[in-house]
Image (cartoon, rainbow over all chains, first blue to last red; front, side):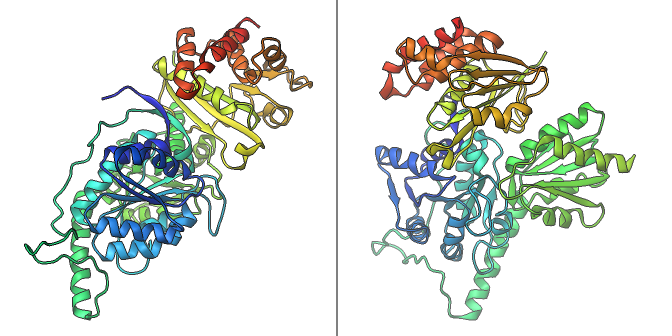
Length: 354
Length: 178
């Protein structure tokens, strides 16, 4: 392992894409994501890869579709409004059963919104990034180290199940610097891709990357088969960090940037003798239902903290199955909650219990 | 005892707010501390007000956003006015008094006034006001080891500007001696 360096989240993620063997990047600039594009514009040609700034987000995501169809590790990055533009292409990638990596460095919305950090694309990422029955594999980093480590993971899991992957970051993680250990080259294991459209040379059946199925029965069969893969992912690919949850009366659920604020608040609550803990979903899809259900017996109150008006809280409530109350606290529009605000919420909930 | 420095650097875009923040962060990294550096971004970069949240700590860092700084380095009047009341009681404010004529009216914080701009001009290192302020902050607060502070300059100055390494180290020394 190399020494720790100080890097911006966006740049560290871009470097991680190179060491994960990604040689095809198609993007379009937007704040607060642009450093990913800028970094790869410099570095990609030096490692023999393709960096292309497309004429629009729509174009970039369709280039990703094409590159992914040939079995190459392909990636695009954008921020909230740009991701919406890509949504049609993402649906086609999912419908074609292709793995590809999409980075969303979220900013405030809806519409053009703002340029400050936000988590208001949770619903979009986990429920419906495009039309049709499909899911993405969604990872939510909370440190610059995770911005790096999740890139090879996103490629590997995406290829294993043939689903597009998303790293759902935000303006805070993209712009901030933290010490990080960069991976050695070839950090992601290559996988066989017998489905890749690479020319059959008259030696095998031809492969087709396609998402158009006129026959209703064929399309239904394909969707059912895809959901069987999703079920496997739900069984095997949930990830979460549990922090001080064993004896927690108040369990706070938070992901990404807001989990950093919550960790400070939980530590402050513990220092005041309040038994608080945190579950940090790392995979937003599949949602870590198991990690949450493990805490239902011991938890008295749940609190979900997000940088939006309350989106993940739905999934927490589904996981808790009505056995406990799940409260919500959030800031939106680009405002980052403070540890003191979250501590107040924890204290109120703990006080009601006492 | 574990110690956390919450630092807010603030000034105009172009004064080197982000660079001086990176220097402090790198010094902390070289000392083996936990560090985070969070810039204001967007239009600020293009000449508006700019600030940088910095945390140097013995413990893992939760929120990297500094809301109540232990240390405020103010490089222009709008920044001083905006953040002066957010400094924790007992905290420190370092004021570039060649940019800011106003005096801090609080009596529960320690204030150091340093004519960084004037010192830079006198020593023919104009534009290094920001680094002189970091030198002053180091002298008064000792937030890192001296060795790491100077080594951080080597790490932060980009390869195409190696001539600036000695200039920046000189600026640190001027701040330390001021």
